[in-house]
Image (cartoon, rainbow, N blue to C red; front, side):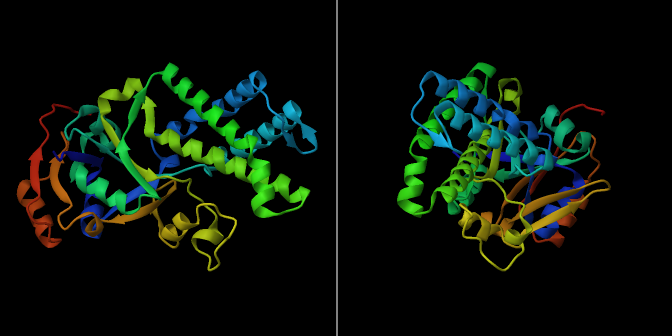
Length: 317
């Protein structure tokens, strides 16, 4: 059975969604949820070090072997990601939904302290939309985990990464046919991309203390590049692993301008989701939209059969 998922936002953003007929997948570095991207860093590198020391295998990097070579690789990766996290370079574009359309924590955190609205969409239609881009976009319910469970996930992923590292140099030699100096460059390049994928995977998890949110997320499977020449340039970069996703995003990143910041986002066309994507709008506990005014807005922008109701929560934020 289909369910309605609600996107909480300010009244101004609701107007932008309805008038522009677009949803925004916004840069998570500018959201309340950026900590989730940090969830596996630097823990995944520490876990890989611990696992490798307990179950080492022959490894060569930067003229050193085994533990010394692995330690150099780990240090380079750590320094790279520490700098990239600080610059907002490890990111994804995300849009969040909730299974409940009238929830106090969501009004407080995501809908202008109750002055905004929640907009209802079909879970089936959103999932079908992401399925059109199954190799690029994913849509699913957040998995709530304890600290211990998160640590177990990190260790499992550390094991998987080490298994990939074990054969990485051989794969580079067999497939890229490059000299020794290039092999080193490709080793760190591919290792960084592997870690990037792990950090994006963390977006499907959240601490169990937030379980009452019943959150769903739509986000890109691969890390978002902020390299200007790839997004707005004319040439394709053959060194990019996620070339198909870059092509989807090319020239399609726009910006929400705030008084003190700029927030990059990628827009989704509502018409690509369905002919009638908006099922319901709930007015927040501190919102003053009148039914007739909302109906006029729907009429102006040709939205038919959109239900409208008021929050039942008593809240004065």
